[in-house]
Image 1 (cartoon, rainbow, N blue to C red):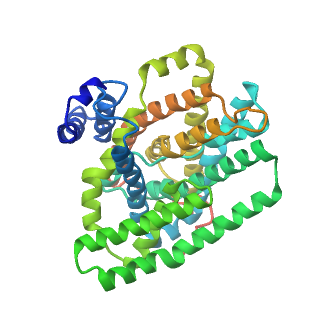
Image 2 (cartoon, rainbow, N blue to C red):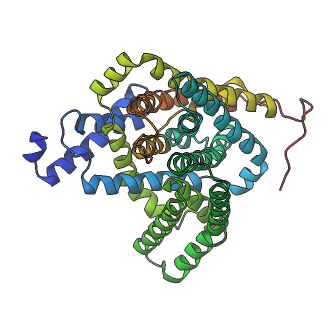
Image 3 (cartoon, helix red, strand yellow):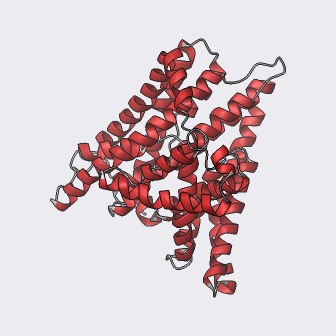
Length: 417
């Protein structure tokens, strides 16, 4: 941090931007995902290395928070609802499976390591969600509307919402005991929230753009307001803000029927906000802490990584077996659903900070450290594997390889819209 104190904010900003330009290019030259360059830049400039940027600085925190929300907004905006509805059964199936199998592995790990059922369920939910960290790779390869990709993207809705619901329930049980009334209220709030976004958020954004959005800067501000309101709405019902931003992207895409309303926002997001989000992910990498956790609790670290990797793979494999597809598509869905970031860290930190009347924490520090190891491993391995398997799927399309359809295998076709 002494080095940071001798540099002006403008100089620090220039160094950060320079690294954010050069390191992704370097990663691509090494045939690695460019997004790893942003994370590496965060490692180098963060508090655990050169200390050029304060991890708790209000500016970087704001940029990163906006970047996280905008990242999920554009993931949702890429969804073609007409195509998504055609594959909604597949997305729902994958979402349920990719939540339940890692969840079961996490619960088993929690019980084996001596935790109660409430804490064990929480541990399972922490690794049951996923962050679409490698989605920019998919976009670059033109696979955003591929069935294997839309399946994973659609499943994100289920996993993130379910994980946040389990977190809210576990916190409530730890502090005040189980209540069916609380669970019913949570489900009711969720139903009202999702309906409100799809009924009002997109249409209000469209009307505001038509009435006031004659200038691009006004359209950017309108979109930022919509995203912020939807994210805060999710927070009010104890869900992660990324869920609201994700749903807002879907609603706005359906309402505006084009990219004119978000073109300028997309440029500034990918130039500033989203890189800031990836930079702060690099801040989390503390090699000393990760090493200590790996040495002192190797079984815990291996167990939580294995529960995630195996559970996600079984979900992808079963979905392909049910609905048809190639091994490359199975591996693509698996690798795309591996990275753990926002929801995982948020759940672990919230659980650690939750203390009941007797002073007991809902989650102990070793699990928080193991979750951090999991985040680092999956954020590095996920994009690398996604790039490899996405290339194979792209090659299959170029070669005219068509996966076996459900009809040919005697399975009922999905409902059409």
